[in-house]
Image 1: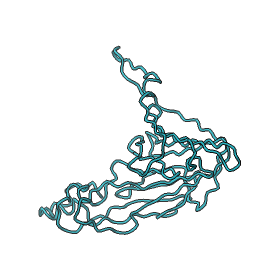
Image 2: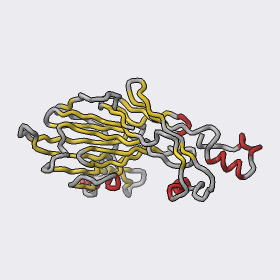
Image 3: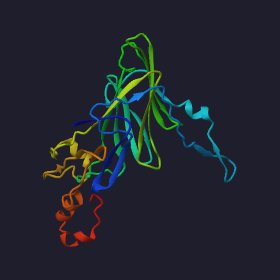
Image 4: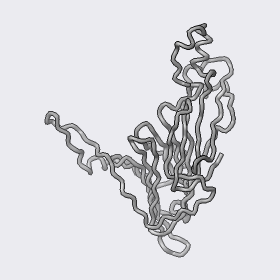
Length: 274
């Protein structure tokens, strides 16, 4: 499913048990975005990385240039998600890459376990810019994982149809103390940005007996049927709401309790997948 969004509002997700997961802020539910970025600059406060010194009880900030030397820099677009950069904050992780001129990232959060004990990606976000500084064959492209700042920075420069140079920067980062992902766009001329949330779990799935089950750990050799329930994706409260809700009585612990004849103690056994 592809739900078109426009940067400016929020996208909210939930994980197992129906607990609320605020996955992305500043992405609404508009089918077409007319959001304009005209020389927009965003000021962000970053937490400094500190290392202990030889002095007892003293902490000294790492010199700025020391960590910067280890930044990962690419000068070409990726073929697919296998060529993505990691980015994250707190308990949220992202895979970020640029493919065919479009910015994409997968979302993941610690504890997002499905009823079959599989870690689920929360979905994917696709960002399209128009005019597009990443799509021209002669575009100058750079993708950098900035370790000290804790974000992925995408820079593109290309000649526009009017002959003017379009320079744009996209920064993607995650807050540490709140489950919020930020996508920032700035350019030297007006630019349209349209973001889409994409989800591939829109129907119940019967998991076949192959390598896919290895990701479940406890069900790798289980001979019976294993079903993964579908996600819910909907427009809600001026945004896009997505979540996966585990069933109350069909999780891996339920299966193991039945298999081991512990039904009479079921209410006493903690089930962290509900």
